[in-house]
Length: 115
Length: 113
Image (cartoon, rainbow over all chains, first blue to last red):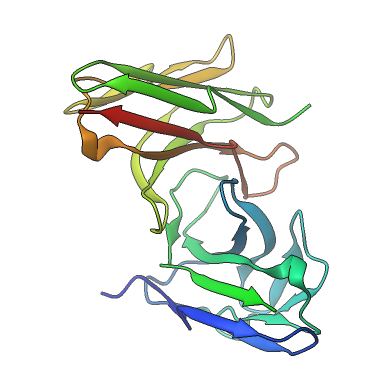
């Protein structure tokens, strides 16, 4: 049981390049989330999904896109990378029904630098 | 104001002392309150959670208390050890009916040997 798996673990991008951060979970969770965490700061929600085919914006969605074609996968797309997107990105999943009442499980994160 | 306020932002204690971190929330309908520990360079991991039908929950040296009237919950760590040094985050449901959490800004706990 792998839990939440993120790839890659590290990446350096040049300004203006694009890339996709991969996230997959094997716990059959309905909810999936993408967060960014800047150094010494808390978690900011970028996008989330309540199930396959359904996504919604979080607190800081600008410059990112997501898709959820399957229950397991929730990739995060960066278009036209900017230095402000240098951060650690965490994917998380949880199973929610009847309200937010279950914990989130986090992946190990992707450390992304834009130079 | 923020949905979840967490204090203090940093906490420095001597090994063996107790540590208490407090979070306040705004939505009186909230009924689930987890605490996560994040070691340096690692992912956040759940260490304890509490639901609104209980006032306290313990797991060895860690406990969480909930005061629904005052809308706050606290993490208590007794007999602290250097390996307790980490950033701790609380979370509470975001008001408005969405099934997503709001995280506190985190508390950096430093336990001096």
